[in-house]
Amino acid sequence: MRALILLSILVLAGCSTSPVSEGEAKPIPRDRIYASDIVGPAAGGRAEVVFLRDSGYFGSGCSHDLYVNNRKAFAIRQGEGVTLSLEPGSYFFRLETGGGLCPNIATSQDLELKSGSSAAYRILLPSDGSLRLTRIR
Image 1 (cartoon, rainbow, N blue to C red):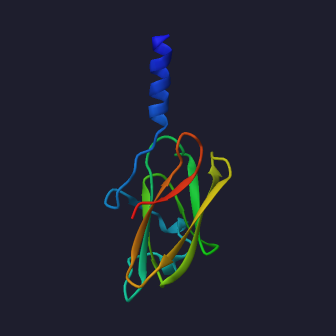
Image 2 (image 1 turned 60 degrees about the horizontal axis):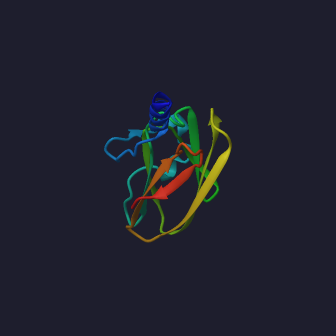
Image 3 (image 1 turned 90 degrees about the vertical axis):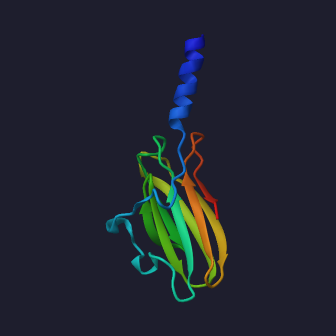
């Protein structure tokens, strides 16, 4: 019985993901960036929004697509990060998965950006299978 409990704990721990910092995140390759005009550091009164995808085993076979105001901006995989430079205004971020080995799941967030502001989001797919886009800054 104890062996079964220990095995269950190890399996659940192996399914968890770990946050990635901006310094640790790998850049998204150009072939998965669809809105290159908004990718890069903010300058000239624009706002900066960073998206960081967790690393870890669970969900590693999935690619997540992020849309900015219903425009596909990029596809992100585990351990990657990207910075968007956006004009001040209202934004709707939609995150979808379904590419690779994952089921079709979506989540979204609204954000009002002011000139020179910054925000950051953590992208995670926890072991309960719910896709999350969580603001961390």
